Length: 114
Image 1 (tube, rainbow, N blue to C red):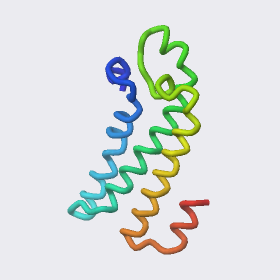
Image 2: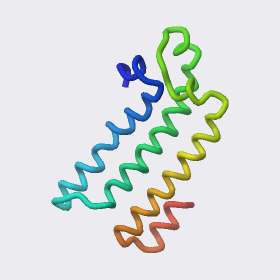
Image 3: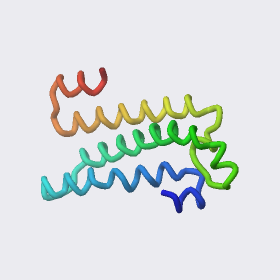
Image 4: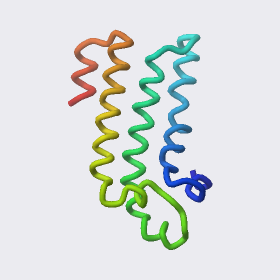
């Protein structure tokens, strides 16, 4: 992630890709193969990482500008709330698809969207 901050405007996306890889590995280890469900959960995890780390990056944006590193906080600027709302919607859709694909019942959906 620190290296990516020097290279790309979206280091939070890279962070999401790496942090959430455990979703795929854990599912594969437990089930013995990959299916649609872990990829939907992986997508939801990436969206969540984009949200929380973008919000967190706003605390450092003045320092980031000064030292020349990049972040989604700088890239999104005044559109951060709108973009994070879009990531929240994408995360919800991904969680819904994961629940449908794995045959979850009403409790899952209620807990996911409350």
